[in-house]
Length: 409
Image (cartoon, rainbow, N blue to C red; front, side, top):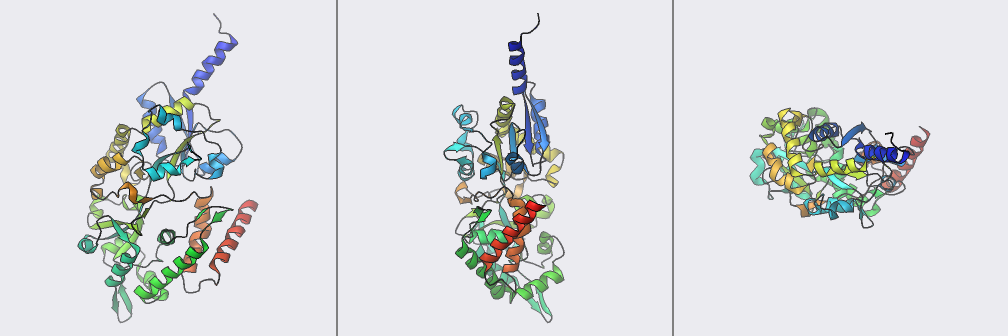
């Protein structure tokens, strides 16, 4: 018997709900979706890679059922998302398993629009022999890093032959430091920050270079002369005492090489800043296949699934190119505390408690480009030998020029 129009619509809607597009900027998601598809026959997740997931949601056009990516917390991206609160009320996903600060960042006006998926933390590495000299077993404060760095310096007839740490050697460190010192970058038109705190942070970095390393010029001369290797190799060779890294970079170094190094999480006043490129997951209001999307989230957020993901990464040696879950720590606390040390032994006893973690602000959808093209070069220049007279005005001007170029490009 031929199906009626109504029954065809019903069959199509059932089929549509069983297949979902996952739009992501995380390459590993293709592997995870494949594992999910193989684990059952009811639902299917099809992955599409998009370098700017947040921007794609802001544009008109077809929306995916599921998004997993960075910079999804801004006002443009979240306008496409639906509440996920029902996943908690139905006990599909345990709300208490997440880091509270990261979960809160995905909440807007009392509705949970995004679930945290993975994150990274800034750290400072050094030779294991220096371990007893670091006061805290978890963190290294900015002030202590300056003191320890200066104590490591060795000067010869023609200048420094070893230097403990230069705050301007890494623009990523510069950004983290000024954020810890209160710069407070956040979404605006296009960007807002604390003007007074930025000025004092820039001054702090400049005087750090003067106090500890003689001057910015001496720091730069040492960098030009000696620092042509990856930062961790300079530490291994004793050329530098300390190096700032991101957890996503440090934990892809081979375990054998990492065994000669130790680390602490970078902090100020006991706060460890979470890197702003947190990966979040959300479901679009207008996307087809929401049942499949919810089934994938339920599967992904189980400890059993994340253990199997880590097992596969270890078996196929993909840990050598990508850290942890989706390039970072899991947003599920128990996975980091119980499972990660099995795969990354140097993490044993080193995961900072949840209350140490300081979540970043909500930043613009184009933050990745804006930071790379404007903010980081500005910070490096403003802490150098010829800082601008009015740094806040210069940064504002450069941001507006960048926006115009981008609009006309």
